[in-house]
Amino acid sequence: MSDRARELEAAAASIDAASLDTARKGIVTGCQELIYWLELLSRRLEKVPPEKEHKFARAFSLIMLGHLPTRPETCPFCVQYGQSRSCRGCGYAATHGRCDSDQSSFSLFIEAFSELGRAIYQDTGGLNCHPDDARLSLDHCIRSSRLLAADMMEDIDSSSAERLMERKARYLGQMIDLLPKELFGPEIMESWRRVHEMLRNYW
Image 1 (tube, helix red, strand yellow):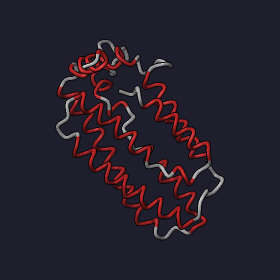
Image 2 (cartoon, rainbow, N blue to C red):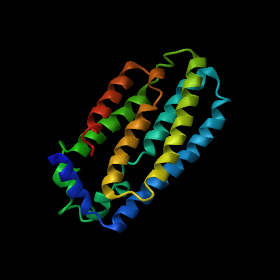
Image 3 (cartoon, rainbow, N blue to C red):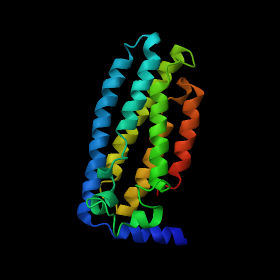
Image 4 (cartoon, helix red, strand yellow):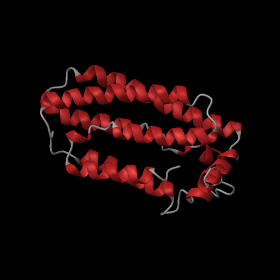
């Protein structure tokens, strides 16, 4: 085991069962809400005219990003140490920097993540592919996202804090990979790459 792996293991070992359970419930709630929206979007996709597919792709992407586990209530460290805002004793702060520090792992990730959302919201140039291809892509993204969200809920049911953080980082990457990037302008791809780069140090 590397020194870094030992540091992360020690950081996660400080999380108590109550904080872990609260974070787990926060993640599950987000997954459940996302699945609800994905089922709704799946039904509506059939009736979306070609000229509205780009708008639909933006809506799907923003809904997905908005339900990913990036909020404090989905992090066992924030649940346990973030109430007083002092973060004293937080193993994540010790290994990744305080989340409110400009150069911390989380700060760099959330900045890139927010920029990706902004870029998608402002992408109004229209589809970059044929509408039939766009529809197939959107159907695949919606179906695959739903499966990943369902798997995530099941997979973290009895996770340790270390396993939860590892699984959450992987889930974030998998879901961001399912954004219909090919339907948007080149700025989206650049923002997507930046998010993935910052995810490497998320945990």
